[in-house]
Length: 177
Image (cartoon, rainbow, N blue to C red; front, side, top):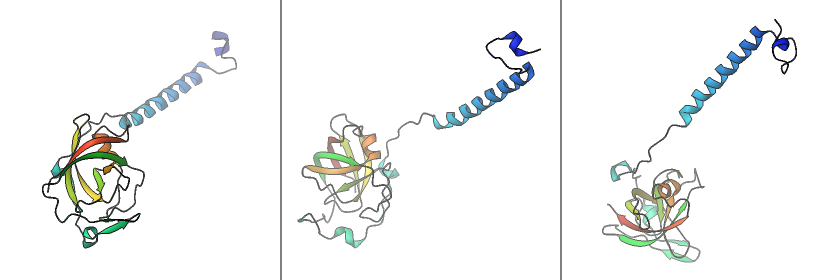
């Protein structure tokens, strides 16, 4: 029997068996793609790191020396004990793979930050004062060198604090070690 006699829209001389085999292959391909893509679309619960989750790299003497950026000299603190400050946080995240001041490779999706004078590395708790979100991260780089900014967060930290869409937020930074 000819399909063209059953369905005038198809035309040609394709038999029903060949047409059915095409449909089975098409269905198998669609199911295979759907199963592959389903692994990519799993919902992941955003986790908030705790102080125990944050890795502190070993410090080296270079990070505690005074340094000069754009004509201004910065003197790192000898200790972060009791450090607590409110200020403006920004985030950065496109420098993937570059080395931080502690020598680690920067991971934009990690939980890290840059601060001008805290000893490196220092574990801090950062709280977004606009929405109450908080996370623990490690300060492993120097910056931000923009007037009025207290701390630069990685994109991952900014996302946890829900400030990644705005770019900046008023935060409380507390040293934990």
